Image (cartoon, rainbow, N blue to C red; front, side, top):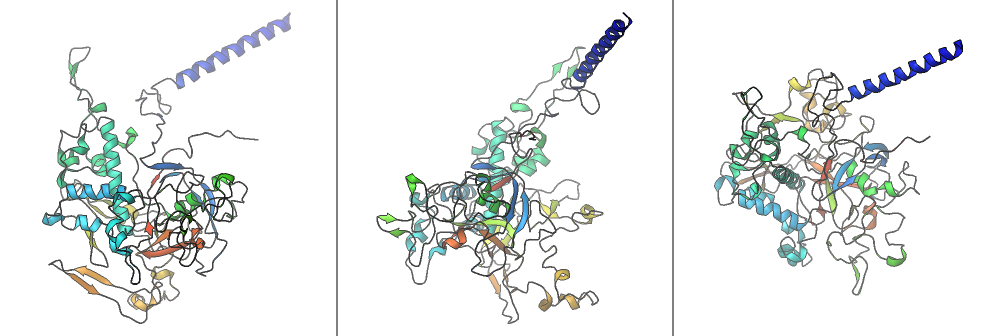
Length: 559
């Protein structure tokens, strides 16, 4: 009897504990209650887990580990792709290369907003236009492409070429502004059809300006920049005590989850990872990087029954053979080809081998320094901050303070536009007591700076180490500028002591093109070219960083 009472008491105690835990659990997870303090918070902001939308034209690339730089052949003996183990975060990438049609949309917008007839803007349109003369050859008749390739509708879906690295970066920035502008309009934070209004140079949209000071966007036009969700201008209403209460009027912020990260060129690591697409090729030892092409197998022709023998990319098959015999074409093209004409890789990306080679973000160096970093590797970081005026507010670029970069051929390319926030290099206020970076320009970190040179004498004076002959990358130092009258001034370096073409203004480009043999189709192959020059075989595509989880689908732990 006594035993039964004890058991009953224990059962009752267990039930009370279970109820108590359930009650506590329910209270701690109540809607609108902070898990940190218990106070009520805005439940729409707290832990909403809003997923990032893929921007127009982009496909998702789930990040992971891969062997960067592993090639089966190195017939050029460049020794610039030593295998290194790297990890790339998830990101988004253009499904195809940027096409002529896409780039013409950019040019048309520039011409409308920055009329070349105005003195302040006369160089903008010309500076953004591709160099159509890249098609010319001393011993070839290519005037048809020179005159038609960019603008004729027959080439609308062909990849744009004749675009240098600087122009590709500026296109990516323009695309960022137009996409975020459309998203804000769609969500009611901008007046409907705002992007189609008579936008002028002094009243166009810039994402960072809007986020930093919304009242300065569109030149401060409050008729376009709306307050409140869905653009509803909420009117004051009376509270329970009869007093008038002002409704909250807010602009979109990063916490709104609407603004997308910037469009940009992919890093070399991202591009190579996306091109290799190891995700779908488990029969290869991906950790050793033994996959040669963006598709499976060691051959450039399809082995599938329905398409057996078809070339899987647009490339040069041999001397004088760019597309095969008439009526029996190997790759369906003699120059570039329309995008999506060849199968996509396992990430859903087209022409990651062949058609055109593509610019990436990185400054070229022969060695990938994985000892310094093996996560999201990139060489070329130049950190800036918003410029603050004497009134303590951010400075906005005007038509008088626009920046231009003069290229080696004398062309001027605009690198800042009215309505943007002026940028300056970070200084000691941002770098003080930091261990992760100590200066604004990190292009030469551990490679190329004077301290990295084998000729650097730590015991000598600074002036002694400034000699040009003792810099690691002893490349020509050309100086091409324009004078006060706009005339080009060329000062070419004619020194006979230069030993390399590598400097801080050469960028990596990846992938084979219609002009290349199959050797260059390997995603790990890497080449470089001056950032202010263009060719008829280099194009580009954009990328966008992924925010949030590595992938949407959660994987359960397996034993």
